[in-house]
Image 1 (cartoon, rainbow, N blue to C red):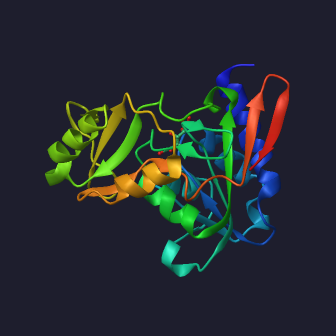
Image 2 (cartoon, protein in one colour):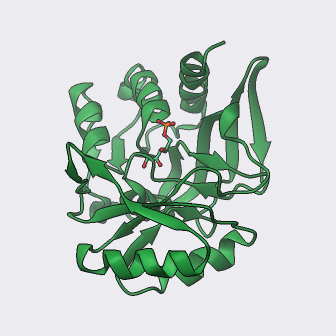
Length: 223
Ligand code: 5RP
């Protein structure tokens, strides 16, 4: 099976975890896009969604799924999102689609994070995927120097020849060369750096389960 077929498989499998009559938290990315398509088929059985990006909001609305403001909803039963890497404890790197801040907000208001990923995303230690960090533009150079102090190389993500601007009006730096041995401590530490909006390590908001697409079908990893 191709990676795209595995994404479709787990996107469809995630629908079984959507609470009847409820509001579901929806992430961002190509795997989630498959989930959104599958969700549209049962849209009459849910109230709607809270979305983690303008891109997902557009897709949800285009398929007739109502989108609620996160402030209008107290708690969500589940949040369904992809990952760039997930380890065997459910810690993740996210933000390849630049939506990490809103993803962490919706994950925090959800009781269970259900990660949907193809098997290439499962790793023993986080850090091979360049770590996305959303940064306030005036702090970019200092944050890059701080990562250099940890042995990392950070670059400002570009789009059409200029720094990419997130849904929140900020920039993203992508950091390679890090050894993230303690994801919880690393997330807490980097979050304290002035100018960092969100670090793409999801250890405090880790996955409760992962629906992993493999050549032999969907495996459920429970953390
Ligand atoms: C977006 C994300 C995505 O969940 C992550 O990049 C995985 O994307 P894809 O499903 O396209 O592989 O964090 O900010």
